[in-house]
Image (cartoon, rainbow, N blue to C red; front, side):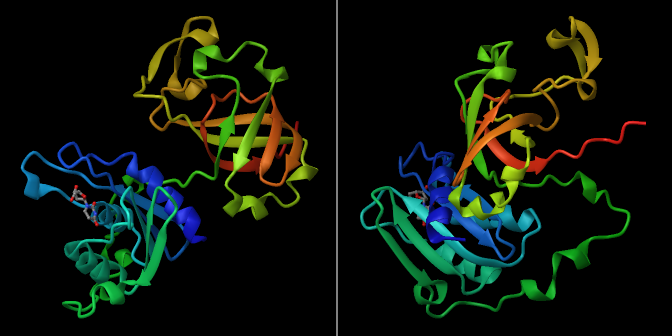
Amino acid sequence: MKDQTLLKAARAARTRAYAPYSGFLVGAALLTEDNRIVTGGNIENASYGLTVCAERVAIWNAVHAGHRKFTKIAVATDSVPPASPCGACRQVLWELGGNIEVIMGNLSGEQIKMPLIELLAKPFGEACWEANPVDDQLLAGEETWRLPFTANPIGYVISDYPEPQKIPDHYRELLSKIIVDPEFEEGLYRLDEEKEIIVISHLHKAKGYTLKEQRSGRGHEVYGVFACRAPLRPNALAQSIAKLVAIEKNVLTVRGLDLINGTPVIDLKTVIPLNQD
Ligand code: THU
């Protein structure tokens, strides 16, 4: 994965920082060995010393999500020159990540990159995580299926609908675009052979859910959430089918998508019709 892509994720993560005391927002994006991004932002506290930096939020987040091997971390700030990780973060990154690349960037495009060992010349301790791979710690019979997982969106939707209520009844006839992150463009190879595609997306504006209620799209009758397409569901995921109109590089033009402007796209798949019998 390109440094730029990781830095963009760090800049996005910075928007979720909680820094009301310093006003200094930091975002961090960690790349796992299997090319997944896990992010963090600094989280401050009224008892100032309890503040945790973005880098530690990111790596703790990643380790808890089951990742144990990392290749690089990007740190985004709005400072000149770009800020580098504090001593405590260097130590934590070293223990959990080893000698990863550290990319430091700011909002005006300045970028510095160096291996962690250059920032932490004489680290304390030894990497201990290799001796404790996460799988060995999983006990048979534990309900590991309950563990949440993270998704890395591959792109986003551009549509004329700013909110769900603005999606017109005749949306099936209307055009939208799907912008795929150039990082994933190669994955679109031969998608142009399809007439229709399945779009899996994150309904990022949906908050909370109900399991059973009157559903407006179903004649105001009561249906369970799994018996309808309501956006307020335990996982705010949507599956839409759209007609493929054109593909130009990383930009797809589609017809009939029912997603609001800015919806993160999680995946694209082909449609396999069920055998009619
Ligand atoms: N901070 C980080 O998140 N990462 C660093 O590498 C340096 C400092 C945060 C901590 C605090 O919320 C704010 O920046 C000011 O120190």
